[in-house]
Image 1 (cartoon, chains in turn yellow, brown):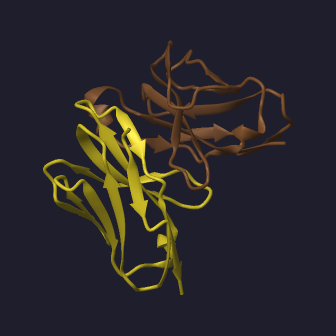
Image 2 (image 1 turned 90 degrees about the horizontal axis):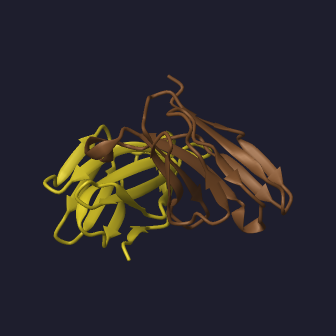
Length: 113
Length: 116
């Protein structure tokens, strides 16, 4: 069964510090991997997408990496802000068309002042 | 742009009651889907639709019905609510086809349902 495992489940950091969230997957065949940010009481919003040929991609203070050989991805947040407090969800698309999605359980990040 | 709109935001039901969760999108997306989100678990697909008149089951369809009479609307019906259906429900949409599969899902802000 395809699985997406995220770690840690929760994380508390001080404002201004950096952090890295992990995503390991067993989805095959791999189409793409997307990171979503979910604020409390809201729906998830896409941060970035990683395809097979991409190793790293940045979106402001967010940098995602992908190692397709080891089936691992990470999301690095630089100089965290209070507004980064949210759940971060890793979603892997399966298949040639990428229509089948497998969701990770998310990492809940709290940034404290 | 409104995006994906879900109503109601909150709902409390008694066991055995039925209700419909509404979802509407104004982006002309053909693909629409319903997920439930439970603590400690990833979002799980309930039902999805690739266009008006076409629906299919996801991972956890039991106890739920859907229909898709228009491109814009995709309601989710709970036939006879059970405590196990206490959850947060999200509707999501995206463009159709291969290109759409590489597009992000656009989510509504959810309906928090409690069944007592």
